[in-house]
Amino acid sequence: MQELVYRYISLFLQTVTATVNPKPVITITNPEIACLPDLIDLTSTAVTAGSTTGLTFTYWTDVLLTVSYSTPASATNGLYYIKGTTPEGCSAISTIFAQSYPKPDVTSTNTSTICSSTSPNVILTASESSTYAWTVGTITGGITGASAGSGTTIDEPLSNPVNLTPGTVEYIVTPTSTTSACVGAPYTITVTVSPVSLPSSLSIVASQDTVFEGDNVAFEATAINGGPAPIYQWMVNGVRVPQSLTAPEKYFNDMLNNNDVVTCSLSSVESCITGSIVISNAITMTVKPHTFNLTLANDFQVSDRILEFDIFLLDTPPDFVFELDMLQMGIKVNPGIYNGGTITASIVSNSSELNSYQNPGILFFMSADNYIGVLARMFPGAGNGTIISTTAT
Image (cartoon, rainbow, N blue to C red; front, top):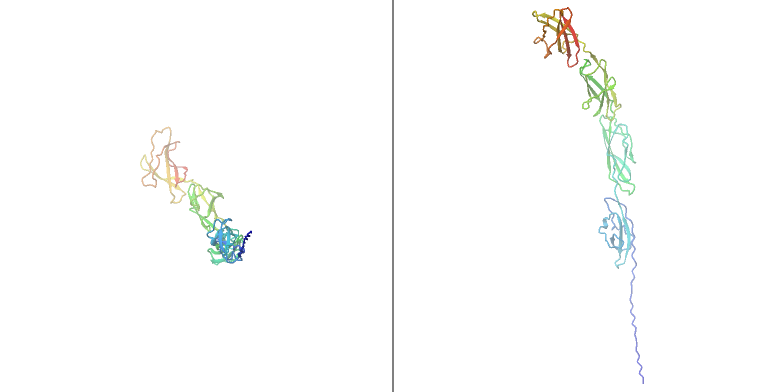
């Protein structure tokens, strides 16, 4: 009898429930442009608005997400990666570019000086390509013509109608970058408006206009509306002459001729006058030559060998100062009986203002006449003299 053995294999089935979560979606809205010193805030809800709700965001600087970014709330310029993770652990990655732009700074000169009824013509420039708008700030001195505006040049006539002193206008300029629309700080440009002055004038005077040859004459110029550093040019008979660099308003000449005409021109550096170059009045010089007449008078024979006399300078004022430089004394005698005697001369004490003289030489006159002769070289003041001869019997 064969026994049959049956083996039963039982299969037990278990039901497993698998939940598949959807992949999250990250929607990135690029942030508005930031103007330095402001930076981009990558954590702003506006940046990830529209993304799957409930995501936790982390920020990275590389595509493999190995280098986390620690300051996403103040991101500097660059490309960043945002990872959004659901509570279940599902995640998605997106990129965002952060860009902050510099604000423009006005670089135009902040001052300008013009004459009344002219325009400042201030050309506006900035550190970035910009457009410009301006308003009018403080006005002093009653200046008129200033108004608000826009453009690249402040170009409007300004007037100083009543004052004798300069007035000012402030233009407050605001630049806006054409690249980023960043608005720069207001910048003040001050325009000084000077009144128009009367024409310059120049007059000259001379220490004296009637002199002798060799006398030094001093001329001096006086300018009106010449400015802080007027330029003088002296002329004799219309020809420019060398002059002082330290005191150009003064001129000295000891070589003038009769009828020389001295004038001076003025080039004014004053900014707002109706005429910048003027010519002075003319001074015509009278220069007398040194042709003086000497005469001997009051001769008196003190003894048989001494003759005393006075020397007079004719045709000169009583106060004219002169100096006798040399006297030559001699006696005209008959050569046949000349015995070779010695002639001497001296100045009588206290007879004049002379301080010194040269010892006179002996002069022989080849004539039968008997009289004393005097040759005198005279120096008036510090000039050059001429030799003059006169005699007394």
